Length: 75
Image (cartoon, rainbow, N blue to C red; front, side, top):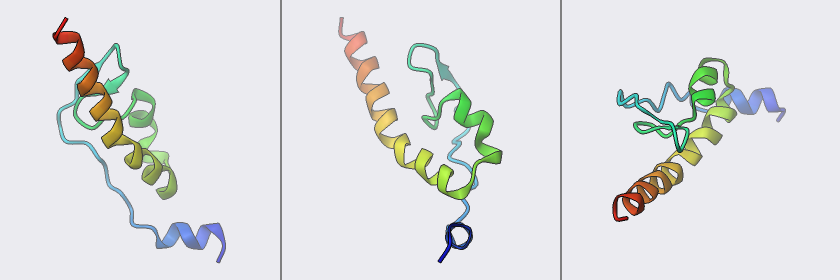
């Protein structure tokens, strides 16, 4: 199976947006979905495999962002 056939078999991820569009300037992430501004801008033109890769990174990113904010607020 070639890459184009594999891409056709992948489910299309519409968007990870949760309508909480606030960018954290320090972390460079949207506080709602965890994407970078570049990922948000490029989302519509990304291939299914690129989208899957971005989505795979979102949960750990948001966890790290929340941990950093919690640590900063304890100071």
